[in-house]
Image (cartoon, rainbow, N blue to C red; front, side, top):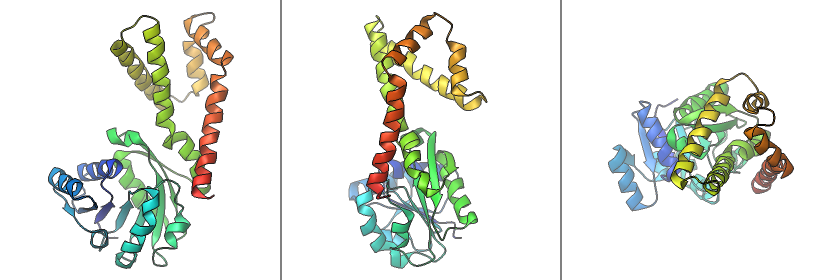
Length: 265
């Protein structure tokens, strides 16, 4: 497999991946970006060659498709004739199935579907990847290793992508939603808004790190903070009375259903 990596799309996620790939020591990286001002910005910031998509994928071993879902079809038509037979096409476009991409590229070209999330912007992303029908274990591992420069990676069957999208793809919004509520509650209880934000943000960071490093289930970690008849118990009891847990579970399931609707699965 060629060492060249082509990043097609220079938006926020495209730049995030570009930055991480370069920081990891990959020297042979090219970019395709349709907006001239943005192309100039990326060229100057990262000292990379910015090409038309069809030129960018020539000799590329891994091709990262980081464009809006509605633009994938047009882009694939533009690059399909220039893809190397051994290339791996990695789509980060939400809801676009591997079969859809495989139908638009040469037979045998490996395809991987990846769902990122926005914490990749700070190197703490969560990617869920699924291999297409022509992708072998070695090719899939090369994609896992590449995306790991921006966070954690899990491999799932494509049928699980909708559930994964609901948990990790949309998940940062749930955390920000919780942060909004924590800050609002702090302000209503007498805190300065900036102080409440600092308290909420660091508490979420610390709790997430504890959850990620502990072998105990979340329920046990919660129990250890919840003294009987104490302040935490008062909050949890109120959450339960207001149906917060049931609402969150229902919300995740609704997100999964919507993901399935959008992808036609």
